[in-house]
Image (cartoon, rainbow, N blue to C red; front, side, top):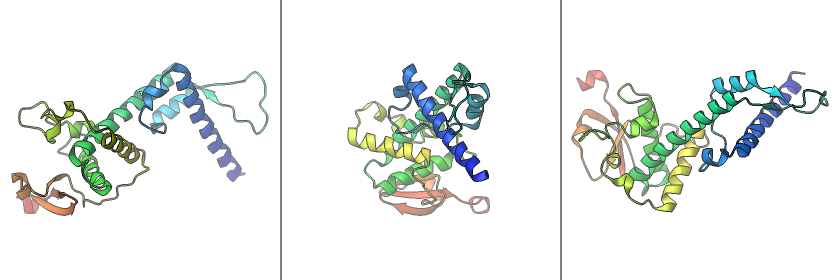
Length: 226
């Protein structure tokens, strides 16, 4: 009985996602949300709860056959929450794609994933913002505070290579959707630089690994840094 119940719930989940897709297509928002992805962004539990709590069952006037999945119709509030969440996911994907493209488009896939890992590691570090976009554009409004030079040297305004940009966007989407797992290839690194330069800040950090043309670093423990 438990197995049958779980199977029914999985079918219901798939039906709900399908209904959401149809709803977005009908409202003309699907292309805006999924213009560079091939799946629905992951939903926060609060949004799923809102959809489930406020949904109205279709065909409620007549009993459904035993094996038929009755699909709930999301309310306007639930759809607004979903669209806002999806827009946020797309924005964070775009910021990660920009970092991959401008910092590592000439690197192998492993080298590009390593740069993405540094960005994500920073979002969990106390000295950096909590979002991908916050990390990537940290200090870009200051004269000499850019964490990544492309955010303040005019590089963003230049034409991108279509193939490399599409590849960076695809990789960013797959990383954030969980389809590509990063692991810990950089050894917990929160910084990197090209192998042919030696920035001053590297003296106060511990080198972890070199991947392609980039050398990666993590912060020294407090006892060593002091």
